[in-house]
Length: 161
Ligand SMILES: [Zn+2]
Image 1 (cartoon, rainbow, N blue to C red):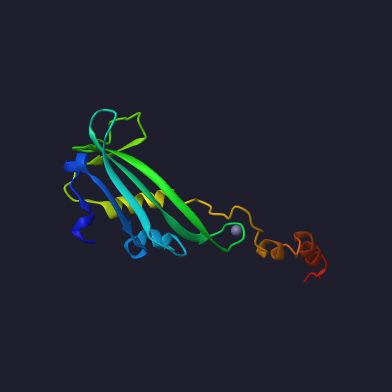
Image 2: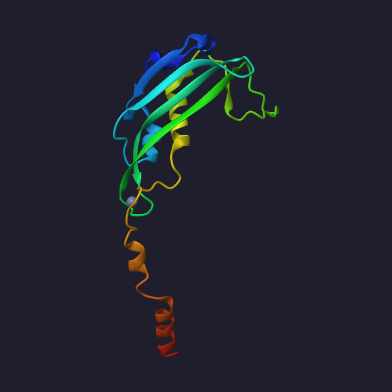
């Protein structure tokens, strides 16, 4: 990734950047999917947090191909997510914050937009991807042909030693 993907957060107010990352630029996401059919649209805009601090609004969208947990066939999932970050000088782990819609992010002159976007896409991955409608995989039914009772009966009928 070139310098173009690095953001100086102290200039967050003026940021309005739209980029597209290809599958090769998102290796951690690619590792979680069967395939990444296309690129991912990323937008980063400078905003103000409710506390009046500088912040960043990130939105990401694109498609991942995963294995449907019902029919075990590939399914293309539309990922669309957004996050808001409040920029702070230093992250304080001990401070309780009741506003969970704004994540804290430390100021940096080299914030990696690709990294930030990939984190957000990973969080947006469905836990159990499924087609809207499909037929369950035949594997389970095949496994049930031998019922546990039949197996028990066979054990009982076998001669003891
Ligand atoms: Zn399916």
